[in-house]
Amino acid sequence: MLIDTHCHLNIMVKKEFDVPLKSEDYATAEKIINEASAESVTILLNVGTSLPESINSVELALRFKDVYAAVGIHPSDLRADWQKDLSSIANLIKTDKMVIDSADEKTFSKKNKIVAIGECGIDLYHTQNLAEQEEAFKRQIDLTLEHDLALVVHSRNAPDETLNILSKFKDTNLRGVIHCYSYDLAFAKEFIKLGFVLGIGGTVTYPKNEELRKVVTNVTLNDIILETDAPFLPPQIIRGKTNHPKYIKVIAEFIANIKNLPFNEVAQQTTKNAFEIFKFKTS
Image 1: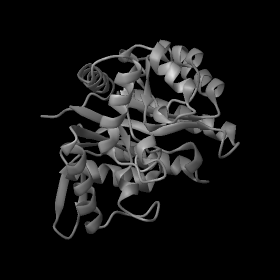
Image 2 (image 1 turned 30 degrees about the vertical axis):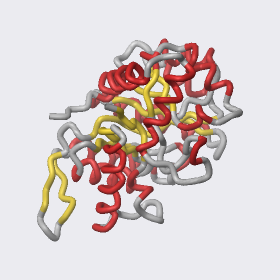
Image 3 (image 1 turned 90 degrees about the vertical axis):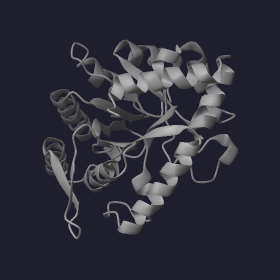
């Protein structure tokens, strides 16, 4: 059993961002889910990046048994009225049920399907509105703690800024993942001290990414979970093409090789780690 702890099915199945899913999109999503399952990737965490895409993420989780949702606002997707968007996301978490097919009058319970807030954090690569990003990040951490959910942290070109904010919550029960980990071993150890795991995906297979391979080699398997970020950041074997949750198996095999561990040990421990962070309810 393998878990993709970070993918964007909602983005894979349509051409535009921030538009609702259509009936045909669900059929495409089901095909992707089945293809992943055929490669032993049996749980997918679909991650929101804005209010519309968080709603799409929840709708996918409600329709498919083995799909779960993270809801939040990506630092590069902070609109002028992001506070209002965040209030709507908070209501999305609190509301027990959701109508996702009014034509057929289908109502679904959201219980246990929203397992995380995110992805949220600090991104100083795409934009420099640091103060606004920090405020939005803290607000989403508060929401995480209020509902005892995991936190999916996006951090790019901002290791100190991200670590500084997370450190303010070190005496809480905050748990989560540093998504698409891209910093050095020293920062990795600091994030791990705060109770976070490292999200490792296809970038670990890139020939020039020796720094990340050094991190993976030197942290314990307890500190890693697997993710694809599909449709983005495909592993080297399909570089330049669309990523897919099924490639979690390729990432697990690569990690097993560089850590000189059996594949099954990597699969079992990273799956265990994911369950501890996200508390998936599979029954």
